[in-house]
Length: 149
Image (cartoon, rainbow, N blue to C red):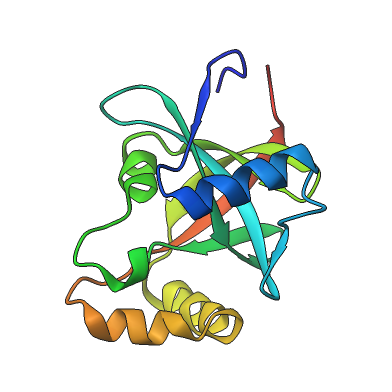
């Protein structure tokens, strides 16, 4: 990802405010959100090509980061998830650390294990899954090194 490109923050007002606070404070304000750890995920838009950034609750697993594409239980996947299916190379910020990562969807036993771990961190994921027929994706972010740019 080219850091020279403009990054567009989430169009959801409260998320954009959270992201701006997180970036401005290098995670000091925003890394922990209502007691939950959050990271910033930047994906490349699958149709626009623009860099898009959002804040997400995360877990950790063996040096990787885990996020959930719940979209509040909507019947549609979140845009960030669709973007990383098209381009799995992403940028991640956890507190003050920014790095490149490759995203992949967890499957089978790994997904089941990580889903359970993520519902411990954010129990609402269970109610979100009950609201939709789609299988909510669990995504693993594998760090690749410091952000380039």
